[in-house]
Image 1 (spheres, rainbow, N blue to C red):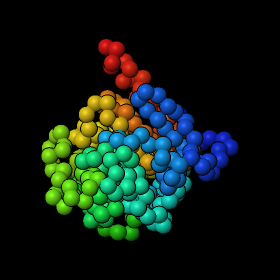
Image 2: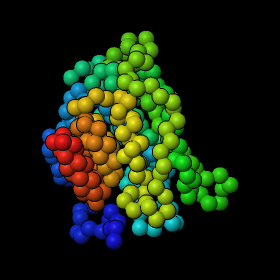
Image 3: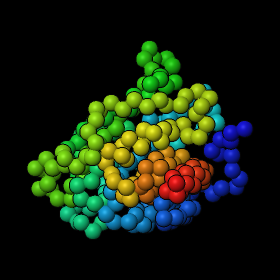
Image 4: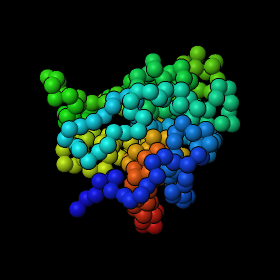
Length: 266
């Protein structure tokens, strides 16, 4: 029987200051911690290659169907996620903190105009994840949500680079702005209420990184970003505030590492 993410015993409700490393290897780091904690942000290796994340952006997710899932921490719209993610990409003008210059960002749930300023983005684009099915959503409405928006942008440390519109030629693969990847629904949703298919994250990672790059996700949930990064030959740095989900991410990433090791040895 598949267990839900919250079937664990006596877990503390909040992570300690600076977080707690639950898993660390050559391929992956998973931290139980708060993405808003400056001591957690300080642990991210400087010059990383990609920020890909799905923050709890105020949807206040709750389904009458998936009763095993509690409300997601921070999903009440009270957190200024653009400001928090700005700390993750690094301060204005520096080349020694945060992500590397002219590298890419993917953030679910926000539009380019909401993130371009805080995250210092150039060459932004709005992408659509076509889930290939209809989510439950508000059943009183005639239209059910079948997609999510994703903001893409190239992070420029210097204002002059953004003003010049830099970043258009940094992608490795050019493809359409609609990504069609089936979302699990109904009884198949057992790990996390807003889990992203790793195949979807793999498309983003493959388009914007090379093998060995470090992919960062400060709102890791069940770890799909980490799974995709490891299977694509990249490394990952994951942070998740919910202890049960963080432990689930560890198990999934470790399984991906075993597969990656077998591929490397073949």
